[in-house]
Length: 171
Picture 1 (cartoon, rainbow, N blue to C red):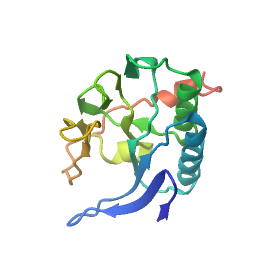
Picture 2: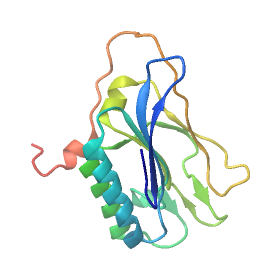
Picture 3: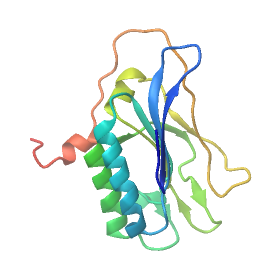
Picture 4: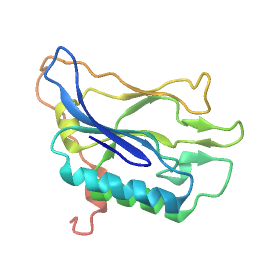
């Protein structure tokens, strides 16, 4: 569906089911300035996306100060650009299970690998989560989202999307 310097977009159909979703794999470049193109591309894709959307990979950026321990001081622009992208695209973090930090060089620990989803994803699959696995042979932890059809087990739980509270017109 599309390839860019930091993002690959695709459409996925799960074999043997009617599950179809958009998948964007990201690799954020190392500077805030370079990543602005990635944020822009995600925002552009969001405007075209009409089905559940999963965005995952190495963003090379954190969302909160506590997402990095040790290492260099967190820059406000690093947080601001990522948060603004989430506001603009209305993506939210998929529930995660496993390790807190997804990257380390042995001294610094950061949560820079993430799985983000749109509201249609959460409405379709309330039970799915991202497993953060042991890194094994890499300095990054592996992200795993297992997608399978599930029988309807009743009403969907209430979900509040944090990006709504940050919107200037909220309340």
